[in-house]
Length: 281
Ligand SMILES: Nc1ncnc2c1ncn2[C@@H]1O[C@H](COP(=O)(O)OP(=O)(O)OP(=O)(O)O)[C@@H](O)[C@H]1O
Ligand SMILES: [Mg+2]
Image (tube, rainbow, N blue to C red):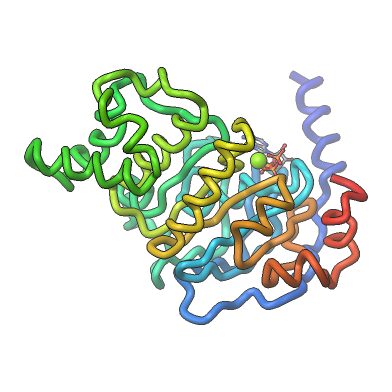
């Protein structure tokens, strides 16, 4: 026990609190969909996100980049309270979604996570049929009542996810039997099926080959017309292809945010430049 306590206090010293670094660039957008202000995230005493403030615009794709461990996934998970599922994690600050703080005690996280959906790094279809993967959530949330409503939502969601033609003749087969890229599009169809406002994506293409990646990237471009998207990616090319704004994180701080073009061609901060030119990462 003493050993554990000693180790813990040693860790705490190593991770002594420090001031957050000021973000360079314009954190604001006109008519934001999400507004994050002074967001801090801790795992027990260890701070993973420091005082991050940023807006996320409507119909925009925001890319989040930065070296491994800088807090991208942690910050993304704050945006739909997915961090609530981690016991040691606590969040301070404000995250407003259409003006309302999603951390208010009155907010029910189940509908919140339908409105702000998430797609993970590793495709994670349910062990059910392709049809049920898409129809399940709309049924649970009371969006569909009849079989024909469900059929319609399954078809339109799979259409939007660019998967319909490939699976329309085998909807009763297991979702887990699809290829990796198809499974990821199935997961996107599942997120879309409940008519979300925002889609959060955590390295959605990292397990996919270039052809499957290109399909997902095309899809992101199409989805932007209807949804707000925040995407974490390790690929600079992907960030520059799919996003309009880019946020660069480093050791828990939001170092720089700006238009994707500016971040990749004329970054202001030395750390951003070092990262995008591959000097570390
Ligand atoms: N569940 C957890 N419990 C404790 N610490 C965590 C947990 N998840 C993340 N961390 C810590 O928080 C910090 C940020 O991690 P996070 O996973 O958000 O980084 P990331 O930028 O997404 O990295 P990567 O690019 O490798 O996915 C790291 O120091 C990590 O060890
Ligand atoms: Mg991550």
